[in-house]
Length: 488
Image (cartoon, rainbow, N blue to C red; front, side, top):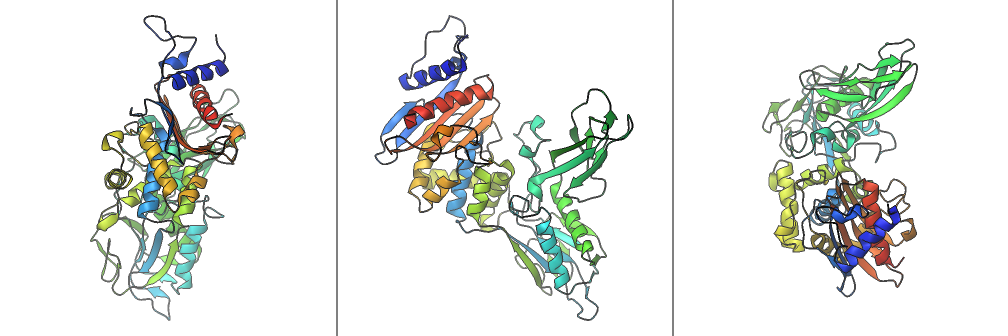
């Protein structure tokens, strides 16, 4: 059996020569298992436009997370580097200056801010506390109405229908929405009991509705069962099963189903902690044109004729959000961005409108042949996404020529960079490689910029489908191509 190194070398030989080694009749050469994979490669000199390496660059592949290149480039062009999501809180009526009573509702205008998490704030609860404190600081001591989260400018679709069902419990397939905390995930801490068969204690954050997380995790002295989560739509609860050792503590993270409701409940709880009572509880308004408060309607740019703006919470600028998307390959943020792209001309944010905006941008502005792309989501989690190596290289060349080109390149993962998807890959190319990874079952890709030993800047895309091998073996083949391009 050949070594992993020789497998990578074989893959490189195939790509450079654009031919395959001889195979036994009727099957793949098992000494060279990468021979059965579909490869596509294109590398272009950025200065001259010369093609340095090409193999099946016109073929369409499932790209995995290299789809985030399309999402983020479209966002920079259409939204601008300094774009910020803005979450506003309005009163639905007048505030009595003597009693501090708001005669009406509090309304939060939700715009899908993807930065309401510890990734962008010092503490996870900080954005909630900022909103809640602003209500109290405005002189409100009692709300006669309710806290209303206006989510009417976003559709309520929980996940893309083309995502794999077995991905849905996990954070990388988290649900998006108009007002969502902690990147759409729930962090759960479980503590095993002090006696056998005792149910493990549970706490979670963000903390929204009481009873949202239910523990059926048992305490055992023997072999344990991994903790799993199932969302129960009839009770809107996340039920955990499995087992833990006596007294053991385990922290797990799961996708939050129905995250807008949980965020609304968490904000209501944060307001109560400031001493402000909200008499009518909380609710989410999903449809535009709903009346509430004193002359207020959902979906309006200024919801309350007799109300006033209490506070506005702004996200970091788009460039910071994009870096937090590309470097760790954060799926949830990418989906929030693509749905934001669909809100132009008063449309409701949705995947259909957002992906249509991305497709149109690449066809009309970047000039990519429509047959080269199928855009289904913003993150690349769907296996129905398609791209060609030539379309990705065309995108990279376009971004390189834009005024924000050097800034965009710095947003991409780099070898050895902490929390980057290249943190442990291609360390020989530190300072010379800036590239987006992509990985799904039987899918591997890498696209970006590399500088060779002569100082030549190269845009490249390497895409692999159908290898039926561990991801590590495919990565070694991809990395061998990039090392060859770099002259290492």
